[in-house]
Length: 178
Image (cartoon, rainbow, N blue to C red):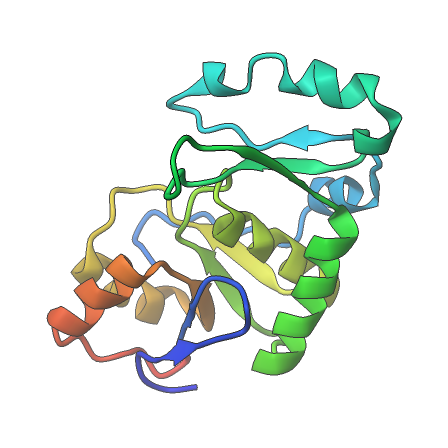
């Protein structure tokens, strides 16, 4: 898995963290979340009003009660809310873990926001195989990111193409564990 490279698993491209990373094991809360049947709305903390009424709407409709809602990017017009099942996330988590041969010994870096499907999916992957994860909560910086990956023992992460471009453009060497 050495080197900055792309792996196409049908979800956002995966890439194979930071001085202030907070290591976390898959928390009991994370496991409880994946066993729950409650609906969940992944809101952007900078735009909390975007989801006004969605939680109540989902709770009122039995067929929507257990879905996880994410806002699309709006690349084809206005952003839309989509509901995905927990089982879809968990099935994807199992498939990605299998494809990457990820195990409980891996350490994921969540470098995308949790209101982004690519960031949130890592929680499902960790739930499925017992891997640990840390969250990158700072402004994106390719040099600090690469340095932190090496220093913190990060073995897996998920990035968007712009982040990968920054890493390649800076000619940064990938840490050995990636």
